[in-house]
Length: 502
Image 1 (cartoon, one colour):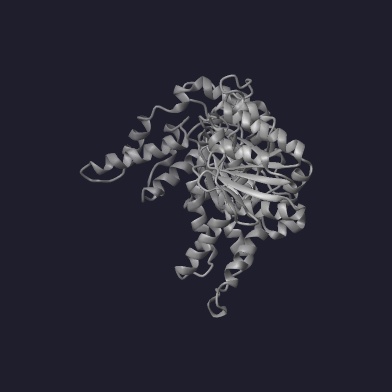
Image 2 (tube, helix red, strand yellow):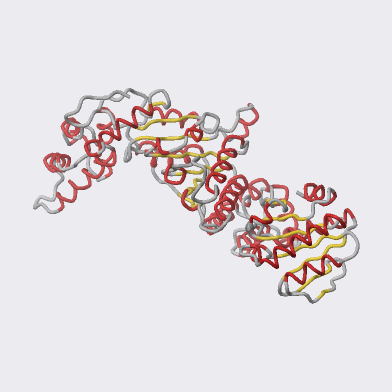
């Protein structure tokens, strides 16, 4: 990052816009750049005025327009940092825009550089083509090692905790410098040394505060999933793919899996369990959280999501019902000036070109709502279609859910229940079993019987009956485009209908 900024300044770029929450880290790096090329370095904020970083002298100038005028009047080569200046650019007054343009024109002629620092990108259209935006990345592993070394260096040797540097820096990845220092201090003062587990828990809390990703823990296993044998086999092939042995073998990092198909057939459940088998932390993205109402907010959140994933890798990111966020893309962005389309394009490019160990598992119910380019190979390792469960799979699903109710499945006529639940989704079978148990609670015997299970199954109006045409459309789309998640041709059709094969 230092070399990049140094190149821009030496090349005479008049204005840089650095997006970061880490003021101290950015200012320290800019000071290094200024010293390397013998530039004067000034920093302005609306509370203190203009600070000469080298001498500590302060010039009283709290108004941003006045500060820009003083920048123009400064002699010699200099760098001028404007802190929190993005707040003045969200809805700029004409005088501010003119002052910025004048300051940039002067900087170009006099060999000076104006630098805006803000926690998010806020650029009015009048300045977009004039300012170079730099995304200031979160600290990498070597930076985290430096933080840990600095902190331990301030401790008495007798009080220094014993720890593995690789494990600790991995646990800190994805934090800012200040967050990492706070997490280390919290772990140490609470008597846990530099325990990576404690640090990871603190990181999870910090990630969730961003509002983009949430941490999930899944207690279920593949034994809790009925059917979907092809996805299960694929998942087992991923085991160990992020290990040092796999890297040494030359195995590329897997990119992700996409599951489309009928709602209630286990897509979300199996994508949660996959993370556990792969041994990766499970984070969930609500795709709607990427979209904001303010100018540039959607692009900023997309960038933040990508940077966060890259920083905390290896990680498993699950995106449920992704079509709700990206349906209708590619239509020219007429409603939002193209913001959503640009964010979508950025996400697609990252998904295809990323080399980091970020695995993405996405699900969709309405696959036809997604633009074709989203599903291109290179962005996903596999595409699966999840159909209605077959007879064999329904037997497995009934067995699983009766056992979950604390009953012995062998005591029930499962073959009868399988026939009664023809065309049912796994979720509908689960609900039928739960309804039967509730009915049993209100009987005098308080016993779950075959009769109650059969009655409950008959009362279900399956999705396959209410959405016949849509299911047919899903199957038509999947032909030749996706693997069947069950590893079979479908043998179940809604009641009273002739099967339309997949």
